[in-house]
Image: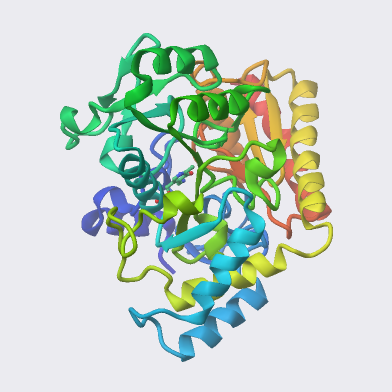
Length: 428
Ligand code: PMP
């Protein structure tokens, strides 16, 4: 049986960095990534046969637990009928209708194969619809790796972004305005200066890519009001939060309805699916009815849609989200109590089946505060928990995810491990 280390070395010879997506490489925590052989419920098993409680959940999709038998059966049944047709299917209508029923802003929806495609397409659509070029995004929010979105602010409130990746020409991000999350004054100021040039605001309505950072009361309402007043499109990127924080995403929790919404992760049940949808008059601009081009060979793939539809149906079980939120709170409250007992500066937050762990004294509200977290303490915590068979995301800046299979025994195992590990975190 090859070890994780042997696999990592072999992988690095054929795959850049040994991984197909950067954060998997343990770059910020150090050490060897676990190569996963199989997963079941709350557990992942690595190539060495070691079992871990998993709080990554494929970065969100595994809300029912890994390899849910009904989802697996749906995939098997769909696969027998053919893997891809490049022609429409009835199941695509079913999932479109299922999303329209659940997500308040969605009147029409188009399927794609990833979150990146969903946000990239939503922004093209917003630009096509408004005839404007500029877009507003927020520091610490991630919307996939499309060129115009790989931007971080310089200093100051109204700085046009610089690319944060090589290979993105400055001209490609010249229209991307990066503002501070939860800072409505900055957005108001941006609209004062550029109001009739801004096509859209794209925002993670609760951010999950700078750890978990919730929108402050009034922030989303303020974005809604400014977009309406200035004729800009409000895009909620609910790739992570949709179907994760509750059955209707953050828009259901807050009552703030965007013009467009992007989804992925859970709606594919672990298979590659993304979607963007929203107001029918905006969606009418998409090809083939409209003049905004967007397409995909595997969009609406029948096997992926089968996994997604089955997942959406199982999420409708009575009390599903209530129970998920209870288990998630047991985890975060329990971790907080144990950190406090050990004298480690730490706090935690949760919404639905999503949580944030912060090695600092208070819950952050923006990127500048998140970046003050003690990453050394996090790294000791991460590796200590891994040694105890608990796998958190390998970065202090990622959110965590609980599934319906994280029962009391699983949470208790995690908390017992944390009791030991926080002692070593404090000892440094
Ligand atoms: N938007 C958000 C909010 C995300 O969290 C992610 C991925 N973590 C994306 C977009 C990009 O999705 P994908 O990785 O499927 O391209």
